[in-house]
Length: 213
Image (tube, rainbow, N blue to C red; front, side, top):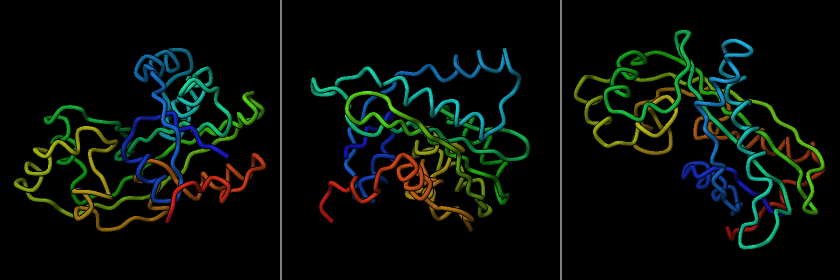
């Protein structure tokens, strides 16, 4: 059974590889800002779990017509998205150094919630049969960094491309004091949640293993 990942996130890819899965990665090409703006214009502001689920579903559905390597999709299709919520604000990727620095100044020594959305489509046989999804959350408590540490971390460029302006599995790891919940949620998808979704679609998690230990 093959897993198709509607994402170009290096962190999600590495996480799946560490779990024994080599997915087929396909860029979904979703305009996230436009999609969120259109949804909020019609329905009002999105809470963090609603936001990540909206984008996860859109990404998974966006690649259904893809034919990687000339072959139609035959397997499970996964879309994911992440956002960090703290102090009533929802943060995605900061993209710019000044934004990342501002966010670290605000979250320094505090605790927030990292939300990861999951949408899994059963596309075995080349036809969409069913879909399931739900968000997962992990509480993240930060150490207190001094200004020099914040500047040095932002200068690496790592915080610019990740939700919440931090990682747990790379340079940002030492700046996190505690995580409550599935740690993989903070990386970009909850492996335990994904396993549950696979089983809800009638699949076996171990059937996705296609990498040598």
